Length: 188
Picture 1 (tube, rainbow, N blue to C red):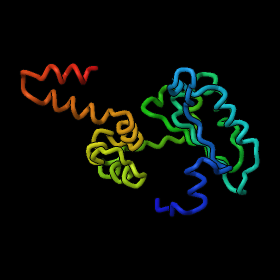
Picture 2: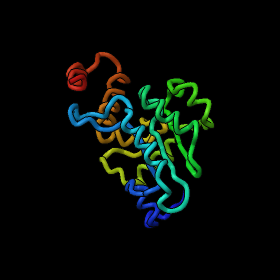
Picture 3: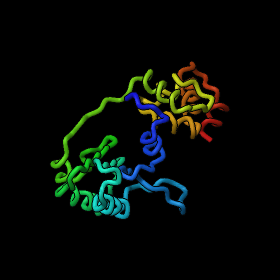
Picture 4: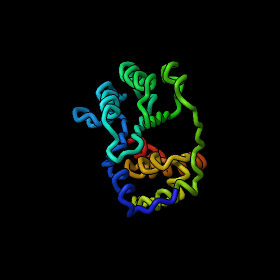
């Protein structure tokens, strides 16, 4: 999609400040300093509140649940209520990672399924270039390791996973005897 990054709507969507867009995803747990394991009922109730409001710009209201297979049982039932009686001019996108079967059958029955293929390595590298991924990694290597997912590529770059994976591949592709010191450093 060719959208000018200087466009006002683009900027509001990118900043998650568009009044007619709601993105629901696993939240950060301050206690554990990690993402929560699931999307809870509080986030799902935010969807209900979002759709009770009038569209801020007079058009469609859009909710993205990323990833719907992370919904806990109570949250899934909350989303189901909205799907059973969707408001006018409402679009609900339920993304799943790899487990659409984890969704309630009643949710799946109310959705239009759209399978999406992973991006090519070239497209992932292009996305990384556009978003300014500058972690010192070769973009082509990151793209290859990410298996078609720009988000996974960013995560690999930010966590150091890409560097460790390349080191691991070099270690296991060499012939025995293996460099035990390097193996132990990598394991640590």
